[in-house]
Image (tube, rainbow, N blue to C red):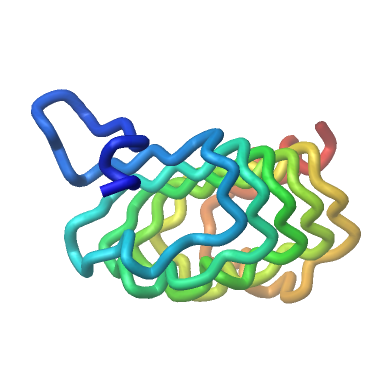
Length: 140
């Protein structure tokens, strides 16, 4: 009940979007996820250090975890339907977990501490425009 009262959903009570921004959260709760229902999850401006339990929501298409305390992005590796991944202003040091995200169209890693690509080969399945936007995000 706490989650529903604090979350913002699309007009009409659409359950495909869950916005838990600025709630002081430290980690995702597995009770938030029901397979096939949630398409957009926004966890911006919290205190999340690790992406956990996301694999329970196999239909997730958009994920935003901006302005948190993430140091790794491995938790996204099983979200094979993901199209948008927004992870700016965290403490991520290595780009990883993208190998199976074949539907990913937009990635924002600006404002992180990126030092290396953990698996550079994973970028070959992305189109040229994606790679350019990734490089721009890394330099900002």
